Length: 425
Image 1 (cartoon, rainbow, N blue to C red):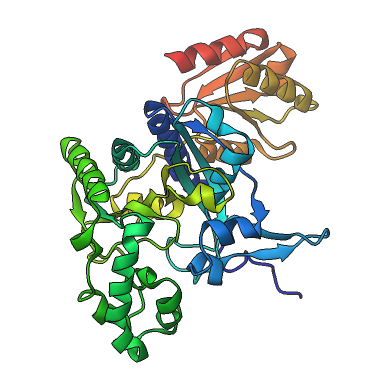
Image 2: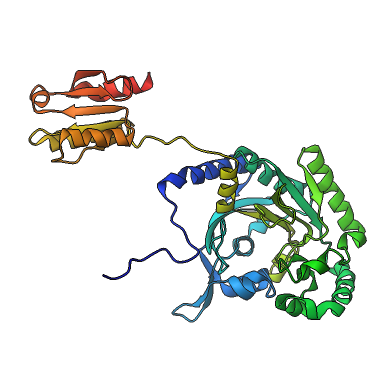
């Protein structure tokens, strides 16, 4: 016998028992985005690979190691979407959103694909909630974006969180810091991880983002960008922190936080559980990227956004014992056994559904006892019994399965009304 197929490594089936978590997250997203004035956008599952090579940066893990790339039959180099921001920026430019009232507040929920090492809460295909605000450099927008994500977690019952925040300045004033950082790391190059050795000459800032154990001893003693911020970036950062303070959102400045994508400037942030000292379990994060549009061939356009994975959110919900009662599959279950009762059963089911009553029809030919077991397993409140004698009289038995088992004979033409009325009580 041939082996059975299984889901590819790093993917998962979202089973019916898991769906209430997904529904809760989607519902909370609809509410918080409405309250903050965001509109939805959906971009393709795949894009031109160059979009992410330019947008995310060719020294990032996403581009260097994790992108799923392929050539289509026309010879185009394409990639399954690994992150939403470059795709949304591309849509902003392509559809002339710069002519819309600014800033443009948009969000999406989108499958993402990264060839990463699978682990709990991290999959090669995962779903991400992503918000972007394009067309404003206001520091209050930064705080608003962070607040939106914070309020989402609150609505989902996740507590004991903290915002880690930093400013990585603007590209030009950052150059002096990068020179200083390079000088600091140069004597230690032989002790660094292979990735950090390679990045030291191409993007030294990324060394502060390394999770490799070989790089950890050098990070704490590295010079801090926060000690030499330009005045515009420092003033911007103070406004963000002031706004978070008045909003009651707990945060700490983390001078080692740089995030893993090349397009960030000024504000970067992550939201992590307070019992996670080095942000290994980040639930969501993002930052400002005022130069991204120019990298993609557009005019200078400030922006800020974040991403948060559904799977990671669900782990935190479960850790906080957020559960959902098991929902009934139907309100009514039609039990039928009489000759030709399938006709009456199917018509009655259609009438009940048209009236908004969820209905399951028992399988033809199964015993009454077996059908009643199925009715009980479905969680249905009512059994509608179509027996031979009842059908001869143009009636059915309506049995309350959850209220003591009381039953009454009801004319078929009044049964829908009887179920609807009893359900409303």
